Length: 300
Image 1 (cartoon, rainbow, N blue to C red):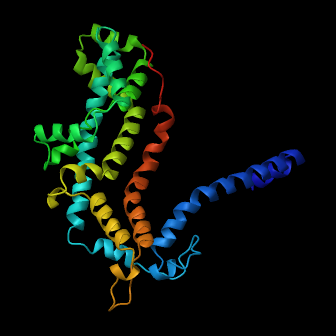
Image 2 (spheres, rainbow, N blue to C red):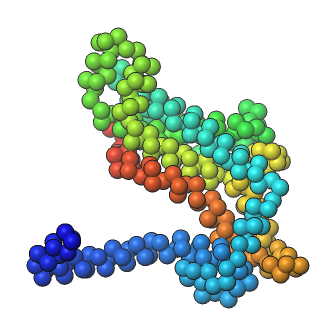
């Protein structure tokens, strides 16, 4: 009732502007949601029927065979467990380490903060390449090991620079007051910095979690010979590659049940499977993004 009363009290120009704004919002929502709804519809549509085309936002011939073929693998549970484990451990170790490194290079009393920051930025543009990195991992005995998922991405320059910029925006008087009260650097980090940088921590948690959850390339490079260390994304990638190479609808079908699986259907089902966990946690962290994602230039 209140909204209707406010609508009647508006002038004609305001009503026209509100209508145009409403239509634009609906249009933006539609073009944003359409790709996601289309992928979900294809994943739940019969594979052979999908090859005819014309699937929009609803499945034309409902089928869950694409999901059944993914979940019906013996290695599926262990691969999901490994993906969840590397995501939890990766977030739990990377975020505290990156916040502590960012705190160190943000302190004026650290005389090497300038060159340290420049070296970090340098690593964002220059890489040794895959082969030297592979030999480095092998020399460090990280291949065929779970820790190859955790140690290499432990401290990433881009996220450290974001956190450092956020810490620099905090008043120095807070840290100086803590020092006068006898607090050391660890006390300042864990009792002052961590509570004050919650928005940037939420941003790091989401970025690192997405990175760890979606990464399949390190499994391919370092742990492809060890099935126990295989991740969900790598197994899905192998399944999709097998379907794509064969390129035959009958190649992944069950002739007895009459169900067949095409690369398009399995690709859509995989997209949904790997996206659901990230989409589930995103609403809880999204509100921190505006305050947390401060991508400023290097001030020093």
